Length: 145
Image (cartoon, rainbow, N blue to C red; front, side, top):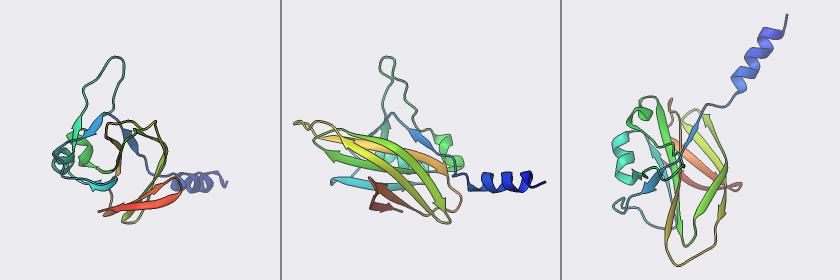
C-alpha cells in the first residue's frame, strides 16, 4: 500500500541527469587566461567562441558537444591551466533552483615545460539555472554566470 508513495519519494530524490563531454579543447582565441576559468553556457554560439572539437584519434571515442545539446541543456565548464595535464574524476551535478553545483576531484600529472589547458565540460537540464558553483576536491573554487 505504501510502495507507490515511497517509490515517488525515491524518484524525486534522484539528481538531475548530466553528461560529461570529452573531446573539447580551449581555443587560443578564447580570450581567457589565468590558472582557471569557471564558465556557464546556454548557447552553442558562446560555447564555440571558447572551445573547439578534437578530431578522433585512434580508438579513442570522444563525446563532444553539439549544437543540439543547448536545446534543453546548460553547459558548465572549468578549464585548469598549467604545466601539467589535469584529470577530472568523481564528477556530480546538483541543481537547486537557479543554481547548479558541479563537484569533482582533480589530479595533476607530472609537470613539464609545455603549458596545458585541461577542460571539464558537463551538460545538464537547464531549467532556470543562471549560475553554477564549482567545488573541486571538496572546496568551492569558482562561480560561473
